Image 1 (cartoon, rainbow, N blue to C red):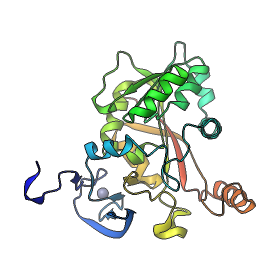
Image 2 (image 1 turned 90 degrees about the vertical axis):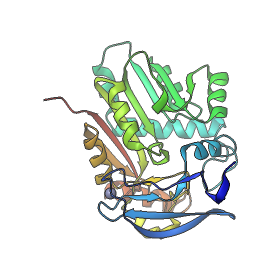
Image 3 (image 1 turned 30 degrees about the vertical axis):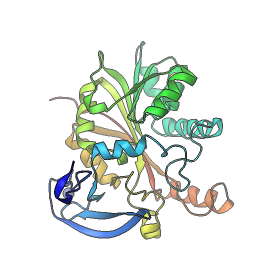
Image 4 (image 1 turned 135 degrees about the vertical axis):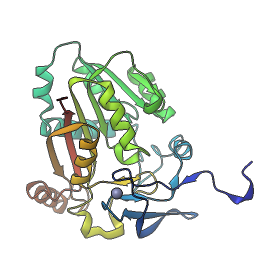
Length: 292
Ligand SMILES: [Zn+2]
């Protein structure tokens, strides 16, 4: 079908922050024995991203099968277990508290509508539904959507957010560990701006380029190529939010990746990361900029 050896499953993006096409090569890393991906940095604004990368269609195929069930150091190995659900919910509550979500929740009238983009099996949708929200989730991974619908009867949509229209605006939209997977974070943020009610809240969590990232070089825990396509610094993500007409009103950094999970070393390193803003995860809450 594809003659002349041209690989239509790959694309070469330009910088989504500044539109520049020149890139500096940083390093390459293999994802499986047969695939290697390159990390580059925009020569103007410094944004780090994978290039070339699988097209959106090719990426979608990768999420359909083993990403949530087989991965050990990338993706998840037991995503559908009760244990994973409890852990995801625990982290979710910490993030919500740090972003002052509960104050926001009290300030808005019912019925409150929530949407989680990149919801996987919908654990945050389940959480918000239990808090009385009209909660929705959307994801391209069909087996995750089926699981959440069957096990928890959640309002989950299988599809691409950019191609999905909704009947009514949402009071809260989240991208939990999702923006780094998106091919066009800029277009998704513009659409969120349209889908969010006036005064509505956007919350994002993503890995943070900066802080402890520099200790690990190409071994950094979030360099999962090619699922993670973008690695934002806090400033770069704020810049993207401002460009898409959002104003940041809360943020926090946490996590270190130092030592084994749950070890004394990890606990101590995570405390230091949080106290000194060295964390390699970041969470941001933003609202629409008011029109002048
Ligand atoms: Zn750039």
